Image (cartoon, rainbow, N blue to C red; front, side, top):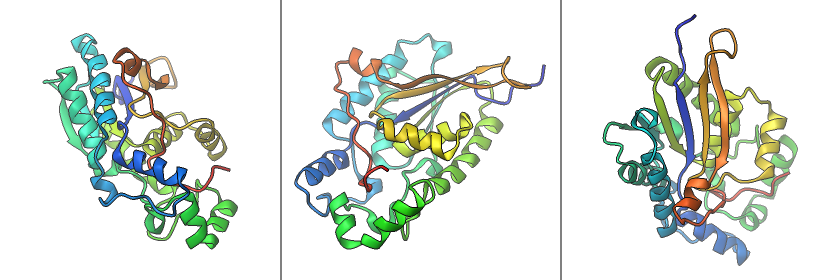
Length: 254
């Protein structure tokens, strides 16, 4: 049998609810053009509820047998993801796990549409809304920002790192909604239509778990096989409310 190149387990986790999620909801409800938050997107912290969610998920990982727990935690350097990872690691007691910040796991960059609500985007940049409707969100890149394809490109490089440095290990990734979905696009070999259909169906809940396990019987030399999608039982068990707010404002989904 060929040498295993994949991690044994891979968990994809979206960060806990952030102060930005809360501010976005308030702005959207009031139909305001901008979100009332002063920090840079990378500096937005968790909300109090987000901290509870991260701790609840950490308790779930902590209840696993030692050999089944994460060996390494890779996380976005954005504060809400970093706080989620640290709270999770502490609550789980993962003293053996290495925590690594990786800028390739950062949120999708929104460029000039950053901190704008749907109302604000339509009012300030109607031509961009029209272009996005024509091109579709998978390929649309706002000025100064990224498309989903741009995010997928950097995640292809992350996968190279996983197969080079963490083969046979249990790896936990803490990132953002778009990171979870774009990883799914790559690992499950989806196409544009299917991943956008998944995106339209529901947002990725904060601190939910999407997991994969290595199966040596799949393919020519084994591959990661999907186990769970947007798994939120750990939050319910930890009495932490489930939230599904988008990370940042976007035009309505087609």
